[in-house]
Amino acid sequence: MKHAVQLTPIGIARREARLFGFGALLFALGAAPGYAQTVGVTADNATYFVGSIFFTGGGVTQWAARELGAWRRPDEWQDWWAAGIQAIGTFFFNISTGSALIVGLSAAQEQRLVWRPDAFGSVCFLVASALALVATTKADRLWDPESRTWWPAWLNMIGSIAFGISALGAYVVPDSGELANATAADAGTFIGALCFLAGALVMRPRGAPRLSPEARPD
Image 1 (spheres, helix red, strand yellow):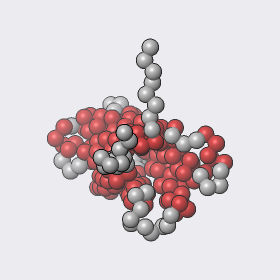
Image 2 (cartoon, rainbow, N blue to C red; image 1 turned 45 degrees about the vertical axis):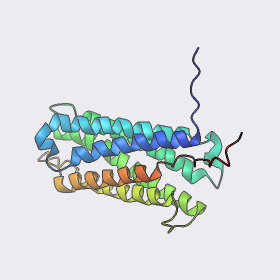
Image 3 (tube, helix red, strand yellow; image 1 turned 180 degrees about the vertical axis):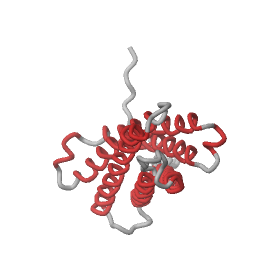
């Protein structure tokens, strides 16, 4: 019988970074100028949906790595809730991007099945990013460019703001069925995804330092 491989904290962080990175890359591709016109609306929506699955994988991995009782400890609750709320937000993105694949939705249906979950997911990401910044500040400082955790926290905050702007632009006008601001919707998604991609690349932990021959055990 094969035994399950127990991941180390570094291994978990690498998996989380890869999943968020792939998700962000697909979201950036879906919003890239000319991509939807080249591959078609259905393929573009499918790109977002697959990206949201990777986001969910990263969010669940991040949350599952936290200790169950950490939400009650004053020095850890922001980090625990940040991971949990972000994971919930990724599920909203699953619903939003999955519903966008359904052909022939009315404006009211798009409002309920596509835009509303997208807005909820964006709010979750904003709240999670704010909590992560608080947790980072508690552990170190609000401004510390030399800290490895400082960069992904701020990049994710900027990305969440961009996703929020995208959600506002993607509001479906009931009378016309058109987006309130398609340019803001695409640009917000593109910029936000690039920020999350950069955050994932920065977050990816370095490997353990190699031992010199003299320091290696006999």
